[in-house]
Image (cartoon, rainbow, N blue to C red):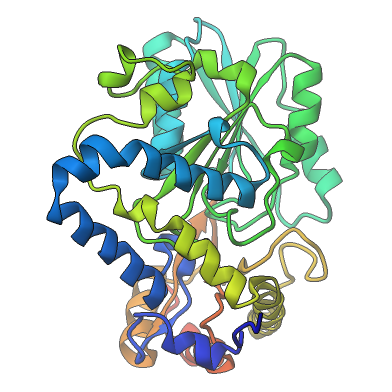
Length: 393
């Protein structure tokens, strides 16, 4: 079968993004292609035509179909997946389900997403446990270095390891497979926040070996907003407790993961039902080639930005420590809010600026719709504005 072109200029026309904006922030909320969005809307219309038929009789089979397609893409079984609104929701389910004892430790990195950190802080405080942030220093040279640094934080009290597959503030790909393997040898539960991984990298959940993995389909997998998943190894599903208790608590079919999480009350499941359309879109447009083009364009951008400020990259540019999202350092005196506002107003560039551990970065996402013109607009804007937006000027 003939496949479609993966040229960025053509792909740009298939997204609903404002054509006047250089959108380099796919990492925050994603962006949905027009054909996938139309599939999403068709599900919504079908729901409204006959809500009782759709939700009351047809939805369980539709949910199963989505999980089967998603499971094939993630190299697992449908019964190991539950559909949830987003990765943060999945982390909340897990933090709620694990009955930590006073003195237990949840070990994470100091690169984690703020909302998930808040989740663990809340539940640890309630249970008398401790949330531990293990520092991972930047710049970093290799995944072995990251593994060694992280494992320094493991103690006899470590009961849970929680870490991102790809970190939000620093866009760093962590060695989750190696950490999960070592943790299992020591009897420590592992939870991976994969918010940025599905669609940005090839994901094999069984090979990773995490006890639990939660991810988003609406970021790099291109589905509509509000589609995520929670994976649990079969032997760990007995630990799951419902965040919202509903019919699945009484009407059990054998899998707590599905029974407790599939139906928590009336809701619009259209975003999740459009996930197969998103997967088909990526297949049609040869997304493996798209990702490589994006990575090459991102590498050029980071190299250019580092040269602009006279700083070194924070990870080797020829490594797999980043994929379609990366950070580049900025001067410590940069006024990030002023820079963000002026870059958008004067150069029409949408990109996030990050302050992490006292350091300042620009985080650049390059998706299939991003052209050379987009990243050149960013570089041109920063070259002009950085001298003007230093604090004290």
